[in-house]
Image 1 (cartoon, helix red, strand yellow):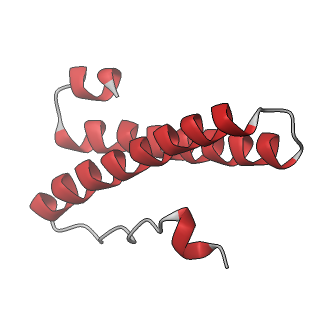
Image 2 (cartoon, rainbow, N blue to C red; image 1 turned 135 degrees about the horizontal axis):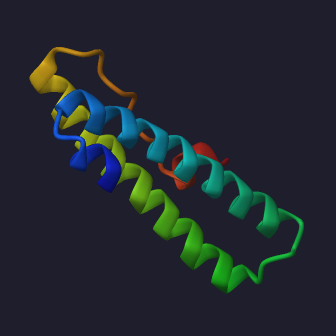
Length: 86
């Protein structure tokens, strides 16, 4: 994110934010798998998963804001894990 900002153009910043979004989504997935396999204690896992979800929402919000200024396609709304699970 800092690298993209330092490059000085909105396009470069958005590119780096999208990379950050992918990395954060990957981390979120790894955390969920670690919890499912009981490699991560439930209380700790829930805390870090919530932080990862917060980071995802912040990144998506920032990308939406920047893309709307440039007329790019919108991002989907991030679902809350409570809404996705039965």
